[in-house]
Image 1 (tube, helix red, strand yellow):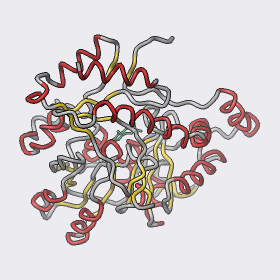
Image 2 (image 1 turned 180 degrees about the vertical axis):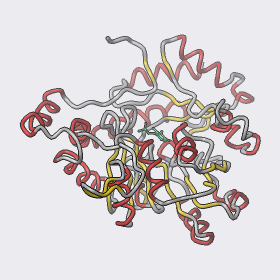
Image 3 (image 1 turned 90 degrees about the vertical axis):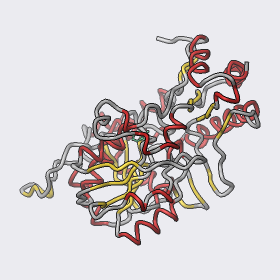
Image 4 (image 1 turned 30 degrees about the vertical axis):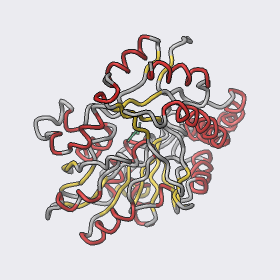
Length: 367
Ligand SMILES: *Cc1c(COP(=O)(O)O)cnc(C)c1O
């Protein structure tokens, strides 16, 4: 089924022949899952590509984050951001921990480090910041606070695949980082995810937790889950990784086209990429100020939808305002996040979007 609608993203897939070639050995070996040869190859290749010490692969990013929190044996409160996807807070709650929401920085939309310390109590055990839209958090400031208070730092790097700062991979900050390889992300294994870590003890724990806590044939040491990446997922990753530079290059050209139309327009705020950052152009978030533009984000969203262009309100509503959290939290405590959530729109951006479509989208926004 194909249509002319433009959505916020479109999954990248390798040429069909390339994938068939990659999976043909699975039909000889009958090794379908449980850390087989494709799994092994992909984790090695990703360790190199992401410039990290170790990569542990998972069935999806969410389970990776949940089991990572469990691997650190955390208890109590976790400081996180409300300006993120549902998964971040859900992983904390489902691990028996209590999220505490910290406001965001008005420029990068990542956790504002100057607001962290006021939220620390004697129950705080960790900080879970998000490199939202691939914008890196202020990792130095967060590390300093974590060291001072003896807290673990686990990054949700779901948006930051391939992002580097001064040559350092996004997954090399903090105690561990989670990447998502979901179909809608810059790099996908259909569904999939990973934890990057440096402590080998955490690596062993992760290995067991994603496979029912099984240590060996007769020893089950942990209450684990099943979160293994299978061989067909890993094969998709091996193929997609061969095309990643081209993928990001196409996104960059489209991103620059958007910038050429939307830059320096009063009432429109775009994200800037710092000089020492290599970005992945995963998303194109735009914040619209209704007082200057005389129209709201919701009007622009509807104008685009009228033309079959489906932007997304990432991230609206804020996590505290979800039905499942609103009885316990109030988003008034994070005013910057509230301001951005009410005005942000994520515009379509994917490798095979056309320049003409970008021109058309911007024309609708600016009309
Ligand atoms: C996609 C995403 C996740 C979850 O990843 P899955 O692979 O879909 O489970 C977690 N956090 C953020 C910020 C995401 O965008």
